[in-house]
Image (cartoon, rainbow, N blue to C red; front, side, top):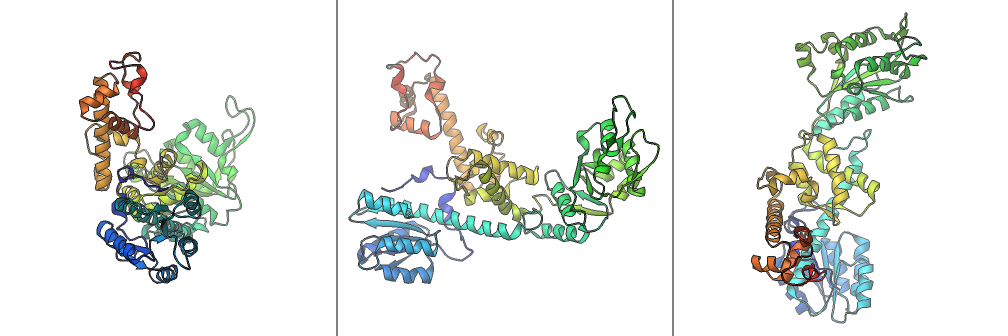
Amino acid sequence: MSQNVPMNQRGPDTASSVTESVEGSAGPPVVLIVDDDTDMARMLKRVLERRCPCRATVADSGERALEELDRCRPDVVLTDIKMPGFDGLALLRRTREIDPSISVILMTGYGTVEMAVKALKEGAYDFFQKPFDNDHVVHAVQRSLERVTLLRENRRLQAQLESAGGFSGFVGRSARLREVFSLIRRIADTDVTVLIRGESGTGKELAARALHALSGRARLPLVTVNCPALPEHILESELFGYIKGAFTGALRDKKGLFLEAEGSTILLDEIGDIPVSLQTKLLRVLQEKEIRPLGQTRNIQVDVRVLASTNQDLQAKIRNGSFREDLFYRLNVVTVTMPSLADIQEDIPLLAQHFLKRSAREYGDRGLVFLPAALRCLVRRRWPGNVRELQNVVKRAVLLAEGPEITPSDLMSPAEQGPVEAGGAEYLPHLPYNAAKQMMVESFSREYLGRVLREHAGNVTAAARASGLGRQAFQRLLRRFGMEASGYRCDPDANQEGSPSSDRVDAGG
């Protein structure tokens, strides 16, 4: 009844991850071995300490195991079921109460299917019947240590997320981000004009919403104008409005967005793209607090706070004449600069966890967690699209991940994998060694299998013989990499060595 998965089918870099501290403490993880057969317990201790990155401790009864649980809080409990007094199933239940992240592996010399099913339903990670193979136990303990690492890292990130996400939707604890929070708090409940600067995807609109939400104008909705999305003549009428008959098609009066924002806040998003002719009229709004709708002969006073955002170099636009200098100084009373992801790398795991939680709610929570290697991959990666790009990468991983764990390869799009498959290595420096190695091995394997299948017109038997592999081994490789021999057959009715069905990849072979 073991749940073993071969180690070569696990996610990349998982075996090495168990040596990392999950709670910040020094030293290797701890495995508690519980068996009233002391010879068996000592043998397991020697095997595990020699072959696993762990320290093993031994208890000869359930009662002693409880003392060890309180004393050293192990990562894994490997326990016999049949013991005098406090047995293994009772120890399993007590361990789950103390810390659900501890993996419990049960073993017995009197195993039955019913007993195994009961143990697994009550939360056991695995179940062995004695006698067992040492390799079997070692692999199970390694996998259970990986599970503990993932669960505790996930729990730590979730706790940090809950404590770090309390400022108007922002997620992060870095010094740069805290500086932004502090500035927003100081200027939010004023009417000062604010210019929000930052690269694309850094959360400029989120900063604007925070400024509005913390102000006395928050009782009314924030009005947002996407300046580059509208042609010049439409943008002017949208901002300032018009009266009936102002131009052909003006069949009734239209209230502009500045009047819609009366008593509230207006955000001019990407203001660097506003045409120069409109910049003059916008300058009048900031100076005189009044607008003139198209076709109107008089000005209208407005009570609107103006926020503007841009990812452009406005000083450069001033030098080339595409942005008015006097408008810049009117907008730039206070500047809030949003940091790029490169500036707040320490916040990337928190942001990834936040987007994982959000996407899981949206697409169905499968209990997904990040492998440590995946988080390291995210931290080391370049993010030209900043937070927005990170959000999209995590969303794609949630949709496409095949197992319960998000691996480095789940975080890459086909375009990012392309250079590796073409023989390059542009992306590899951003991955841990084991993950990069696996990517290269998978790339080679897919290319090799595809070529040998093409050379033999999709005939699995002939392709296996040419590659020096047994037919079943060749079939296993095809299944592992999701490849179909039928896609390489020039003629589906052609088969050199039997019927067309003779090269089917058997489900169990």
